[in-house]
Length: 232
Image (cartoon, rainbow, N blue to C red):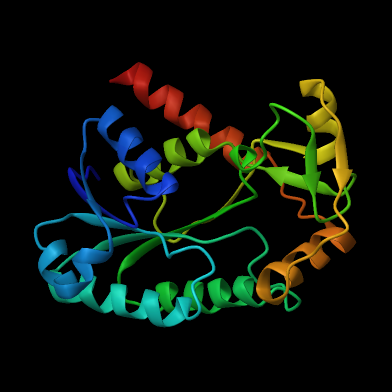
């Protein structure tokens, strides 16, 4: 299966921009769609072979957002969707993760050919150019994902056969914030301040459990990506 014109819903954010760049690298024609596209989303999706679906960060009603996007894709005749979820979506202590779990169910029951990506926390979210301060245990273990790696996998599963019906957890490496800071030659400390609401709940979860994610799925997919490039 080869797709050429691919809509990236949320294409103006950092993830969307990276996915668009990766798609161009594979010879696809990405169509980045931002908020303005929602005035006529089905019209904006018309003529696209697939859609990469990214909800805004901490969206208050991600299932509603995803359901509307899926309905527009169906109305536009788009047959393929890849949903950008999160690692450990069913974590009751993190309400916004639960929103992604419900959204995953909507994607699986949409009638479209689907793939779900579940990346860990982005390495790029940490500024390691100086001392690092985070509102959770700096020794908590995470499966960190490099944004460029996630984008490369997104472009791969949108362009190659064999990924329909798959759900992939994605992490580039397993480490703690303390380990990453030490490698960068800077210090890492835990802040005494913690926000309220969903962010506070997320940081409390990180404090207690981290967010571990295995690295083998991403390694295998990137190896497939490398093989595909060598064959082209």
